Length: 158
Image (tube, rainbow, N blue to C red; front, side):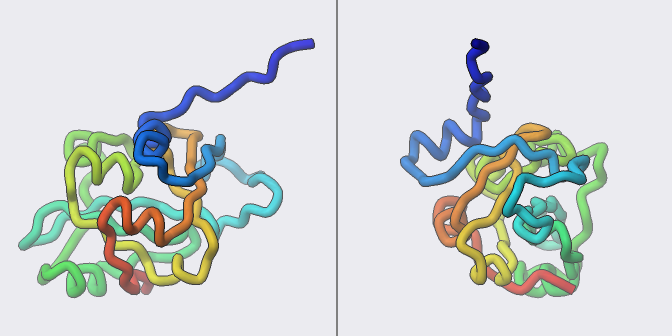
């Protein structure tokens, strides 16, 4: 009988383990996956968006895949006049991650950029966000994540 393949922990999972933060590692690629695991909906999965503010520099917005970011709301909340998405060609050198692998834990650990988590997350027991590698995610309580990465809750949706 073949051994079950155990997934190697991502750096994000190792950081959370070391800090004794409760989470679950998942193998989900939300960018491609049309078939999500049972009990997981697209609105449970959160995207981590990297933007640049005209006053603050890089900022991070985290909201459900099913929602659209309001750049106006994020600009106001973050003390900027305007914010815009970081061009994909500059993403990795800014956040340290490629498109689809940006995550609040790794970005906070390495860059300390301000992070804003949409208030809709407060209605859920858990959210799923990237674990820093394509096809890998973590399931974590939103309040636990926010406390760990010093995120502020704010309405970011259009």
